[in-house]
Image (tube, rainbow, N blue to C red; front, top):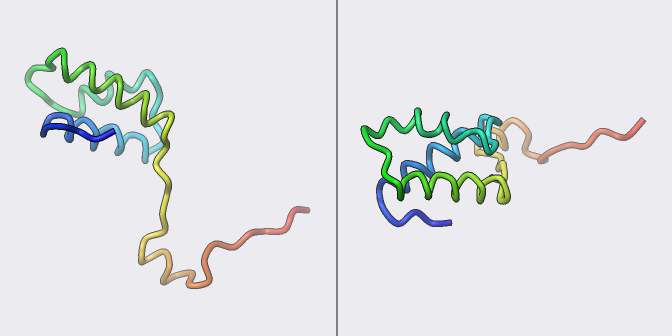
Length: 83
């Protein structure tokens, strides 16, 4: 779901940050709106925020190892045998 303007981009970044912190749910609308700090939340902003949260819940962010993670563990993730 691509943002089409700067306000939508700010909404997407804020929601993604909340999602990465593990706090994303349908009730995150108020948290995201407060974090955005828009002086006025337009009806179109609210609609995009609702749609983007729903989309992000249905399309979670895939956690990717960064370069520092790979440097610590060049062999990649390890699995532990089931006991």
